[in-house]
Length: 448
Ligand SMILES: Cc1cc2nc3c(=O)[nH]c(=O)nc-3n(C[C@H](O)[C@H](O)[C@H](O)COP(=O)(O)OP(=O)(O)OC[C@H]3O[C@@H](n4cnc5c(N)ncnc54)[C@H](O)[C@@H]3O)c2cc1C
Image 1 (cartoon, rainbow, N blue to C red):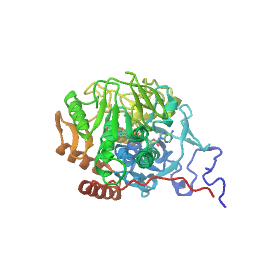
Image 2: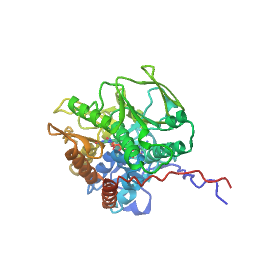
Image 3: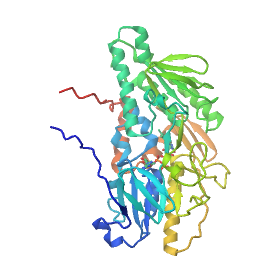
Image 4: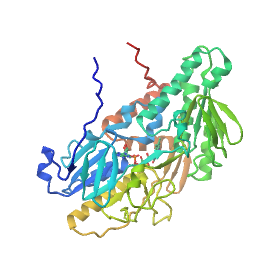
């Protein structure tokens, strides 16, 4: 017999002023830093605080750090989920100053310098670092999420993979041609890097990896449609790069629809702003993101997309012992006079910067803070096998060199040797065999 509350989480009473867990007792008088979010910024901030003498509590609602740039590869069956996720506890198992908690922060009280968790636990801090990243938003159409999942978590990626693989399985069972073509139509909304990568991978999968496996239809007849509201794909890149990416996508068989938004969506398809109706059951949302809602606990001006307008040193205006780092922080780069982009290298740099700032304050007992300066190392996006675009140090290139560089950089930034080796092996196998073996999809348990 199953126990009903296997997943019930403990509730905590009272406020943790000191770290009462026995392994931390010797550090109870040390300054306490609470870091919210173990994404790129939170992980790097924690690393930079090594040797600061402070106690660090790192809180994330997931038990793993997720390498989001490769999430689309899990959604398209190229990589297994474990290859791009690293258990946070494992990452800091040797750091006795770091205490990892898996819970959601529901409130930050800036006056009391206290965070409240969904379990009820309250934790006091000397410094708080908010590194909670972004969430997906549907521009007032929250009901669309059921039809068009976003790509933000492992659960999202596995759901998209389930829908994609299931669509082919349904098509094999169906006799009616219209019904089959609806199942074999895939719509990706939003042509930023995520949308472009998803659409390219869907097209490659249906035209190459699945080609010999279905008997009743030709998998290359599947339609992959990429919809973008602006006049080009990869809008943050130079126009030449966008044009090259569009050409690559079209060569792979992706239909790119520009200057068009989605007006309506239901379980059977989408209606576009140009009046066109596309019948489909598999839609992916890669269109909108906004700062995590926990940021609204703070008395800090926010942008339209709910990012926190931080000071040049990445603290919020008041109290100054609260910092924001990574995607949730909005700051202007003093060199370019442009907002620092919401990309992994920026989050890594901000996390390191905040960690170093706090460490130096604790060591010197002064608050002489310097401004954050972003080092732009370039941008890369991949479209498919041997197809990628790159903009690095003012140079633009595409094709195999960009694809190879993209692969090397992504391997380098993955956390943990195991994940790097696993990913390299899986990519090598796919490159040689066009095989996408991470195609296992969850099925429901049979009723007892
Ligand atoms: C699909 C996808 C593809 C991408 N591709 C690229 C790419 O190719 N190149 C690139 O440079 N960037 C890419 N990005 C962007 C990049 O992943 C982000 O810029 C980066 O992850 C930001 O890091 P972060 O630490 O600010 O936030 P995140 O990495 O998002 O981490 C935030 C963490 O905070 C946790 N959290 C949030 N709220 C709470 C709460 N209330 N309580 C507890 N925990 C909380 C979350 O669980 C998460 O672990 C991509 C993003 C996505 C989604």
